[in-house]
Length: 574
Image 1: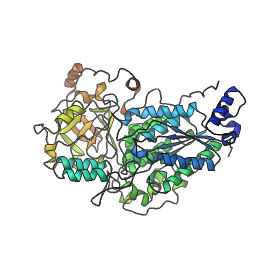
Image 2: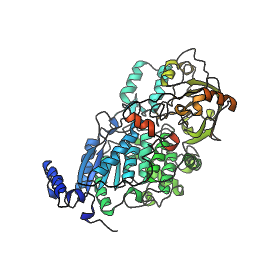
Image 3: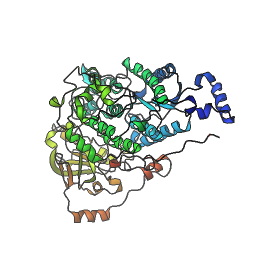
Image 4: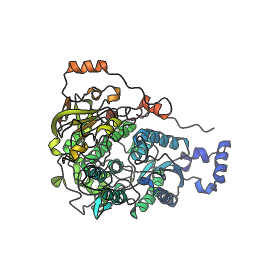
């Protein structure tokens, strides 16, 4: 394998030449206590750290950054830690999704504007993983991703709790009067017991699994719990590996292919992953120049068994998954459903990385013959209500509702829904279809996780625990229920969702992938003529950028000017 020479390093332009600017760079490095021997002829490795004191998923990243540095130094590199915006799922409003593209831009521009030869990305919380990978893919220098890892299992009265999933479950029980405030407080104090991202197969675990199967992590990295001693060892090994990747010049463009993205989709279906994975993987593929659309997700789902028995679609949590063999063991069960010849960051193929994997608990990681579902965890719908598509997670929904016809109960926005959902006079039954609009990429704004609409209190008290719910929002990957999401085009831009009225009949047919509004075309045209575009949400700042450039859900919600592989020139150094 051809290896770079020191003078071919990108950072050489900053540090290695004999001119005024390099004098300035070296003298300022000396100002920070670094001598020429620290960086001369060595790869400069940017450690992009999304640590923050308001991001519990990444609260351990200060220590992990030190482990990465240790590995970089061991391998003869020069580590430079750089902070980036921390997208904290629990705290950032209106939604971290609004800022995914901002972090992607920041990552790309940090790596371009500074003397970086390679990058180690520290992420894991839902939108952080795709954002970091989108930015690094566009920059296209050697990159390793270090996933945050799932937190420990939650616990309440010796009952395992899963983040998100059990929040929604017990919130419904509290509203129904089945548990009291004391129990609810105990659940609050026991559901999150350590740093790390959600330990269900929510968006975070789905996306870190995608990162691994795309080739961005060391084998097995995505499954390691955040507090396991293997986690800092993995971080240090990642630091050692990135230095070698720089000398080898192994870049994302060398391993991101149509086959690797098909592998990512297949994996998401097999693990019963988050509906959000569709938006993010489409955006990631767009950065790599790989065509990927909703139809491809549905086609792969129809032939991929769901073999991970993980909440919210199954019974177990990520710590169980890790001990059962982790992602490598699951991938091995998929066999020829994967393109095993795809390259990864350790220089080997995906097939080579999983060749010796074993399952240690056959109930947690199933085989295709013992799968929880013969099809994948997600399905793509279309029809008169969603001409450009919508998504649902059938494996986390009531099977009886997979074919359903009922009258719409329309809420114009989240505040309207919150104000009326528990009204005892709300005209709903278990057959009603709850509809929430103005919650998409522009209408939310940022497409918040509002799609798991609560069951009206009066129905909860009657024992109802699921009903059909439709919106142009997303929902948490930890959620469950018969929720049709990502309806495109969104209502804010005049999609059919904007024209639905309470009492309209809506028909759901998941086996045939249909979601239809049963209103005749003439009436819909009359309503469209009366419809008025809502005013834009923002008059200044980042919100204006989002309003002008974000794409719809079926296109990945990237900014239109960030997609694709058009080259950006290296900065001149003057």
